[in-house]
Image (cartoon, rainbow, N blue to C red; front, top):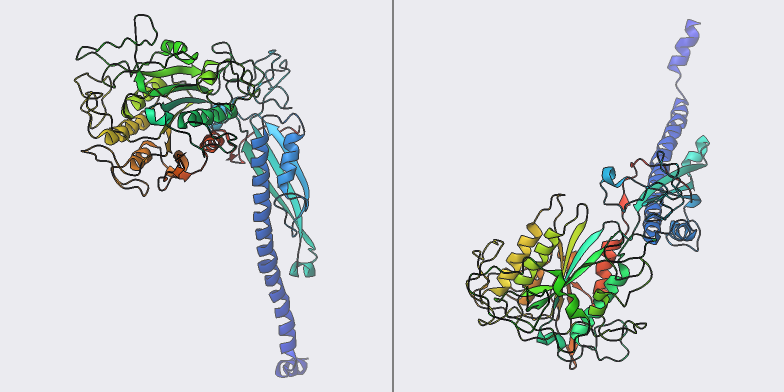
Length: 549
């Protein structure tokens, strides 16, 4: 036996073959791990992208998941078949599962739409879906949902792993998205330029569809606001939207500049504009909505204006929530706010007054007073867990003259660089940026702050008054209207700063740099509304009782 073992030890011919064979098994195993797992990771990313796209599309299609329409939208973006979006031929998607739930808004902290859980209301909640009643409210016949979950499963073939008996791998991707529509309720204050230039000539390029090309810039701006109002939701789903008698969701008000005369004794705006004594407090920071109704009912004469240093009333309409009869019925042409932006013929079914706001002019452009007034109104009317929005639209250079400015009237708010006094006739662009910075810096009790959209509608690329200190902003030269409008907007400029040219008398104006450049004014408001109303992905770790439709 010992002799045999010694001989085998000495005679090693052919052992290399056994070692190579053993090594090949290891090499193939590592190839299976590297290639098949790498391929699986790539396929998993594709599947997750499909699930995210499908969930976002489904969230955008809500709030109507009680029907199959949302499920159909999800399927269309799931990539399950070659006729659908996001199809990848290397993914064999075997199932797409869609479920809905109401995520508790107070604990999830994802700015989700509210879900009605009031027992025995008999009223569909927002948004309506097929979710069962909450556990402690078994009598409630309706329950809302504000999110959907998409789970996609797929199989992929393997390559080297087949040697070890693994012919395919199973993959799963989960995505959760919020409902669109009212992901956050909004308080929106529109600040519209009504100086003379807004009524000068016709802007032939302001609308995406403009059959007669006879709209003034002011009318174009108002029809853009109509687009915004059409996309928003004034009240909860299933309710008739009436000011003060419904559950408001997106409320909208309007301010204009130049400011209107105010007659505080009768509560209306009048043509009698007495000069206020020096030192009187300005009411532009305590806006009074009782002035508005007298000014939106198509008066035979334009509402009178007053100099910026003479107690102007900037507010035309306080918050309104009846601009649609229901949240999906189209514009309510009898509503004051719709009448006030009813210029032109865009509202095809409007048989009531549609004269819209006038642009009386008579004063230069001055932003700071209206910005202060708008923010003060937003603060005084702030509601917890409602996002305050300011949208300022102007086509002009801030160059109000000395007869409209100056004086010693004290402000009720202190803003850096203004010394607590009425704004001066110089550095008006700087004052606008300072006022906007102040507005954006006001923190409400729920830790929210105002977001400001600025729409530069053919603003000049040079100008502003002497003594300016507006830095170069967004690629625009310092101390210019473009830099001013960029400074007014919230960051990032790619979201909050828009620049649209005017095409008046055959001349198309320039646009500001580093702004969202859109050629049609109504499309700007569509872009803004899509940002306000869009669906978004939320973490898949949220706890919910997901229910099939």
